[in-house]
Amino acid sequence: MAVRLRATTEHGAAPSAKPAGLFSGEYAAPATAFTALTVLTGISGLAVVPTLPVAVRALDGLWLYPLVAGAFVGAALLGGVAGGAWSDRSGPGRPLAAGLALAVTTLVVSGTAVTVWQLAAGRFLDGLAAGMIVVSTNAAIGRTFPDRLRARALALMSVCWIVPALACPPLAGLVASWWSWRWVFLGLAALTVLPGLAVIVLLRRLPRPDRPDEQSGAEGPGLAVALAVSVGAGLGQYALSGRGAAHLACGAAALVVIGAFVRRMLPPGTWRAATGLPATVLLTGLAAGTFFTLETMVPLMLNLDGTVPPALAGLAFTGSAVAWGASSWAQSRWLAERPRHLLVASGAVLLVVANGAAAVAMASGLPAWIPAVSLTLAAIGMGATMPTLTVLSLAHAPSGRTGYAGAAMATSQNLGQVGILALGSGLLGTTPADAGELARFGPALGVLVVPSLLIVILAGRVRVARTS
Image (cartoon, rainbow, N blue to C red):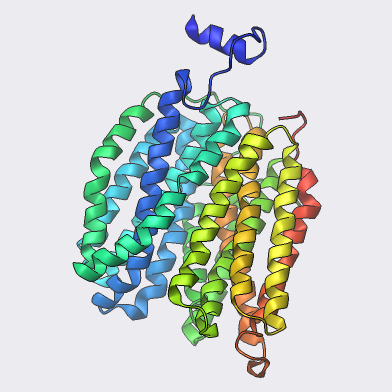
C-alpha cells in the first residue's frame, strides 16, 4: 500500500506530499548501491592507468604497451554488449554483480602478473568488467528511477568520479614508488572485496525486467559480432601508437573488421542521425571522441612546451574532472526543466569554443596552457551533454530494451574515441615539421570543431515527444 501511495503522489494525485528524493524511500538502496559501485570503479580505474607504464617496464614488455593499453577499450565494447543483453534478459542486478566480481578478479590477475602477456589479459578482463558495469548501471537507473530523478542519478555518477580523480593517481604513484606496482593492484583488490559484497547485497533489491517489446525491432548484436568489433577496436588502438608497417597493417585490419560488423551493433539509422535513439547514439560518439582527443593531446602539448611544470600540467586534468562533475550536477539540479535537446546543443557550443580556441592558440604560437584551459571549458560542455544524452537514450529505448540502448551508447562512445583520435593523430603526423612543434597541433585541434558543430546542428533530432 505504501508503494502505491508513493507512486500516486509522484504522478500528481496528492500534490501536498513531497515526492521521494534520490536517497529516500524505495530509491535509497539502489542510489546507495550505484554510488558505491561508481566510486569503486573510479578508484580502480584511475589508480591503475598511471601504474601501467611502471608495470609494463618492470615486466620487460614496453614493446607490448600499446596492446596492454588498447586491450581495455576493445574488451569494454564486448562487455557492454554482454551486459546490455544480460540486463534486458534478467535485470541489471546480475550483470552488475558479475562485473564487480570480475573487476576484483582482474586486479589479482594483473597484480600477480609474471609476464606482460598476463598483464594484458588482466587489462582485457578489466575492460570486460568495466563495459558490463557501465552499461548495466545505466540500464538499472532507467528501470529504477522515474524520469524526474534520472538526470540527478546520472549527474551523481559523474560527481562520484571527482574524488578518485583528485586522489587516486598521486596515491598510486606513491605506492608504486615506495613499495611496488603490484601493491597498487593487489591493494585495490583487497580494499574492494568488502564494499563490493555490500553493493552486491544492495543490488538484489533492483526491480525485475519488463517484458521486451517484440515489435520494436531492437535486437541486440550477437556476442560473435561484438567480439569481432572489439578485436577491431583493439587493433585500431595499437595502430595509433606508431607508424611502422605493423601499425599500418593493424590499422587497415581494424578498418575492415569494424566496417564489416559495426552496423550490426548500432541502431538502424545511426549513420544518418535518424530521429530518436539513432541520433542520440551518434551524438554520443561524436562528443566522446572530440573530448577524448583533446584530452589526449593536451599533455603532449604541455610536455613539448617545456614552460609548464608537471604539477601544473596535472592541474589541467584535475580541473577538467571537477568541471565535468560540477557541470553535470548543475544541469541536473537547475536546468532539469529545460528541453534536453537544448542542453545537448548548449554543451556542444562550449566544445566548439574550446576546440576552436585551442586550435587558434596553437596555430598562432601562443602558450600551451591555453589548450589546457580549453580542456576545462570542454569538460563543462561534456558535463551538460553526456548525462543528458544518456537520459535521452533511456527515454528513446524500446520497451524492455534499456540494456540494448546502453550497449549501443557504449559502442558509439568507444568507437568515437578511436575514430576521431585517429583522424586528429593523422593530421598531426602529416603537418609539415617546419611549422613548429606546437603549431603542428593547430590542424589536429581545428578538425575537432567539425564533430562539435555537428552535435549542435543535429541536437534537435534527439528530442523526445513529451517534455521531460
